[in-house]
Image (tube, rainbow, N blue to C red; front, side, top):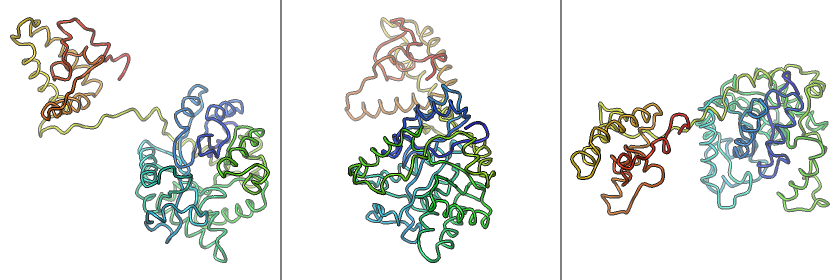
Length: 412
């Protein structure tokens, strides 16, 4: 695996026992194979994403984030399902749809979609017990790239549905295109030396050509190296509550779902070189990184004509006059104002006015309703917090260091 091929469909061991390698191990092997980028798609969640991102950053590998979403294909291929229907686990009714994050908005939509599914999940729900509908998918499609999936994907399900299987698969493909847009859907192909899989691949290629979709080669990676397949089998047995000797067809047919070098993948898809080339093209499109998240505090509602900064300034100076001006034993008002001015300048620079206003509002609510409340910790080092009534310790009079609470160098 090098810059000529990017693995865009790997699972970690956090993926409901479906993967057999930790994110760090996947990245380590990717680095040994001279990989430039890789995507992690855990099942109905982004469990391994933080560790995957940190490991990739350490090895200077581009980490793509996504998830495999359980999708309800029935009833009526995406009509809103009832609570009872949403818990269907029948594989003929649900499918696994791989989604890749392209933008920050896409990451937000993916997390919202997963949250929506989890909120209606019963306690101790099993993997796939709750599925998203097509309508919910459409409401959260912005910023996401859709792959048509592998053996448990919606196309594969349709291609096993009966006499009109190709038409059924084409209809689902067209629906995905309607939801995500033609340039955001890729026909996924995997090759693990399996006749049934290859027959399905040929049908997917035909559908892709009919609908104008680009092909995409992946390996559906479940473990970093071949020997890890044994661990994958054990995890499969744990997930299904069976013994190895009785697991039968629950186990993978071979040990091919490991990270492979570019040379091997190119040989596997020698007849479809564009499927390999498109992995690099798609990787270049996926500009989102967890570094792009950055926490943004909720906005505090302020009166018309005010900004959060101006409103905070007014409330702080009002509080400072009450706390300092003319009070017995307090330091001169001007000295406190100089400190407050310095703090407010940094708060504005770091765009934290909303945070201070929200805490101020909570403090006022508690006091108005007879609820005991008191700011604590390093916030006591802030003259702004003292002026707003958040803390009870005068940091100016006690000469406390504001930078212990907040500094530009340390960040938020």
